[in-house]
Length: 106
Image 1 (cartoon, rainbow, N blue to C red):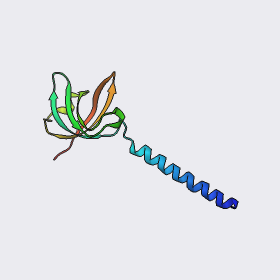
Image 2: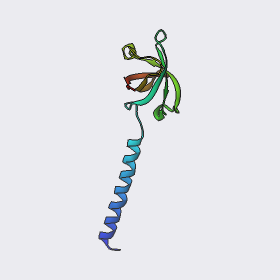
Image 3: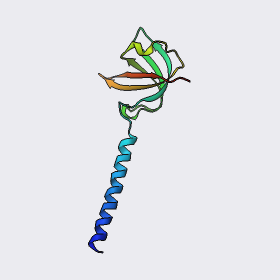
Image 4: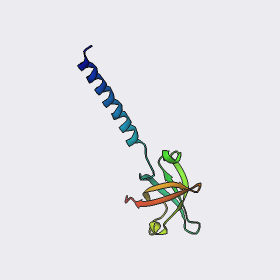
C-alpha cells in the first residue's frame, strides 16, 4: 500500500470514531435536559411532587413514578394532578429534587 492510501484510511477511521463519540455524547441525557412527565400528586405542605416520567439515566431511574422535592413552589401554581409537564431533576444531599418545571398544554 502506498502512503496516500494509508493516510486516507487513517482519516476515515478517525472520522468514524469521532462520529461515534459525538453520537454517544449527544445521546446521553444530562441534568440540563428536560424530561417528559405527568403530575401524579402534589404535596405542598411536604414540598414534594410525584411524577410519572420517562427514564432518567443520569439519575439511574427507569421510567416510572418518583417523588421529588421541589425547589420553587411558584412552578406549581395552577398545576394539578394529571397535567403533562417537562421537568429537570437532580440529586442533592442524597435526595431527588425537581429543579425546573414547564407545563405542556394538551
